[in-house]
Length: 202
Image (cartoon, one colour):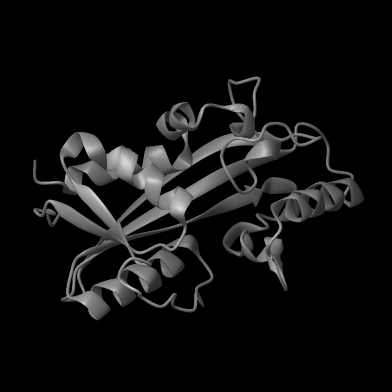
């Protein structure tokens, strides 16, 4: 595995919440982060059909544009009874002409489960794939997921995205009700990060 040996990492995201979560995970390793928005990098079109493909697109685009190693993640919610949807289209389900509407997207998930008469528990997983890419085209891939189930109605105003309808296995509160930093320790992103730390030359 190629090691990352710099003190600053470019994170290929324009999502401030995601950037803050990754910064928090990296802080114990003495690595500072800078986001793609800070460098005015455009957001590449995510044309992949898997989380790995989309994370690779973002990481390599940022590395190529800046000449710096870049970390990107692609993550989403996969609901068993919906054939793994929304999956790589997790963010797309929330798109409107005026930005993203996640309450609308969460309602769509529940409505489609109801239409399918999906039995309880309505199993789902949050997935995260990190890709660490270098300007020479090399990359390393790290994946993590957390199992759980879809619950209704929405609960909690912490976190982001679909967190208020996701009840992780072993807990009686949703990601949306969970302290943000506690969620970080058990989340799909946290689990993928546990594998990523092996790439840090510390």
